[in-house]
Image (cartoon, rainbow, N blue to C red; front, side):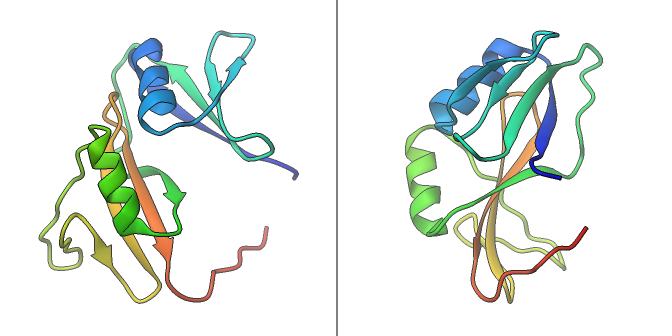
Length: 131
């Protein structure tokens, strides 16, 4: 395998494209043959925004972006109008929108289509995945 594309369901493709390009700064890479929007950094994985009519979206984190400094990223994103989620659960608690575990710090937010997204900062050794 050489690359991967994450496909997110969206109710309004134009609204979602605006969110991902203007709020998150992802470059627009074009459209698929069936009209779905493609976004992503040159040479990196792609994000495909797939229009759906049923309004069904995942109830878990659909996509997480790695950042070098999560506190700075949260401040920057809030200044661009992104609202972060706060949690106070037995297994998940945020402080200043950030949850800290042994290996990473995470902060969650939703896109305009109610997909749950995350930013994360690795704190220790990276996990290695093999396929």
